[in-house]
Length: 294
Image 1: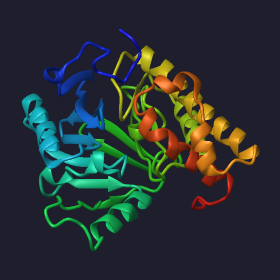
Image 2: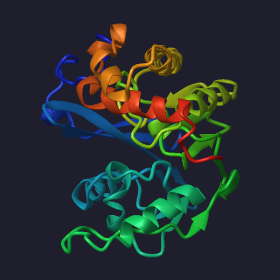
Image 3: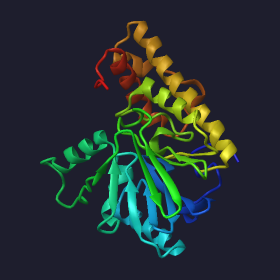
């Protein structure tokens, strides 16, 4: 099996999804298949079943898909969902949050909370769009939850894919859900990213006592493969940044740089066609001092 985010190249079909995998005692991942243009790839959630209820790390991109996630959880346990951690505030991880039960605690970083509030307040928001669920609790740096006998740490390791990136760490199980800070064989998506800070954030994650790193997109493979692939992804980010810097130093405009950028082996990664231009633009913004300060 090749290391790819393309389900077809892995011999998988629509009938293979959603996929639920058990990572450890009470810890599961949920992989849903989604489409972007002509490409298909997965969006990953994680859920933790405890004696005090279920914690979900990232929902899915529609009420229907999030309901499917909730139904899969109900197939495994009759304990209710009590906590949802908004690790990424992007719609493909939050637009279905209305399907979670009322009374659930939604945790988010203040940056993500502001992003979601702004989305909810847009005057041109479609009347039939699902409601934006706002967080009920903010996590600036760390929140430790004790759910029955399970310890869950919700951490902010730095700005990465969204600027409000949270991760969910299970210290006993040595599992770290990284959400969109780790895109497994998916081209670095930077529409709201902080490129160099993203590299540093991954370095912090790699320094932790973790056996299994769970991506927010791409496939959930073995712990050994995922650890290798996180390093591959860190190097991919560095490669994109280096290409942007090279073109910037040559005096090219951002439009010229987008047209001339070449990313070596990353050219074959999923979503290169749709994400390459924005990645160069975001690197240029960082180099020009145009990104929001910390």
